[in-house]
Length: 252
Image 1 (spheres, one colour):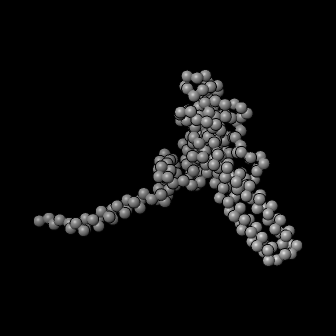
Image 2 (spheres, one colour):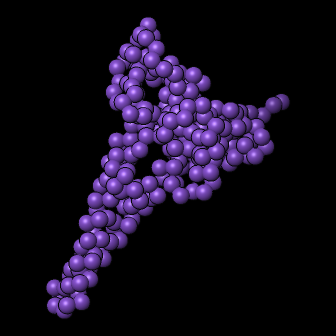
Image 3 (spheres, one colour):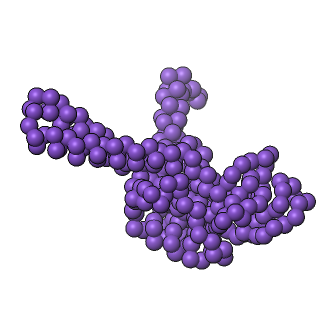
């Protein structure tokens, strides 16, 4: 005669199985599996797993960097550059990232300069720092400035006045730099061309006149949207409309 399992045992077994399934699908586990697939040359599987993390809402510069590497291995230049650029916002001095990005840029068909960020010429040093780094620098200088200010209130000596002026200048410079960096990130309207070949039209309609063509990997600026179309700008005043399906926003 067969014996039936007690309800409590059934519940316990279900809990163990469910716990194992949850553990196997944690972001850390998926990321590890994706890295292993990439190392083994199974780039399609690596892309599937990295993309699964993105769909789960996971985001990090390292994930974007790995996605860029995977897309490059699969021959998708547009998505590779888009993800490299996303990673570079938060890892601007990473040697491997900059080398890979430069390598892929040298192989795109359109010889156009990537658009510069607002105030990029004046605040040229901001391109070498991530938003978090600028915030930390500003926070440290802010703490030192107010510490010296308090010290000045209790120690009215000439050297404290000189130090206070130095930190005041540094505080103003760091504060403005942080504000500009925040604005650059918040207003980043750059996009990468994802389609192998994307016609740019005179208007937001597939029947409009073709002005020129762009190819995968080119970086443009988007100015406005109309339905499923975006008005883009490249060097000078060269503008045109392109379907949203042909571009990917760097900001994400």
